[in-house]
Length: 105
Image 1: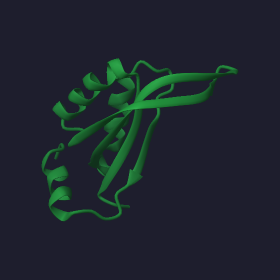
Image 2: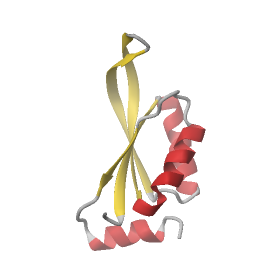
Image 3: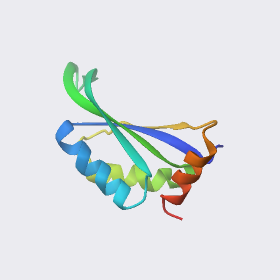
Image 4: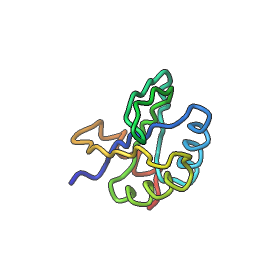
């Protein structure tokens, strides 16, 4: 297991900034990049949906994933939230240190 992860969360554009600011303020993540212009096509309740969303790319420590996941679920309006963690296998050491310094201890 690596010490750091990137977490993808999709959200409606009108929720993303509040979500990001809350998670950074609570130090569950060090940073959230909000990528606009995402179009998601998916099955939901027996039909194909086509929705505009944004992608939130969050950087944090692996040990914070469960707390982050639970908090996203509390704040998010979706019934089933996309919360996917990917390991950071390598990175710029000063940046990884920055993630550690700016997340909960």
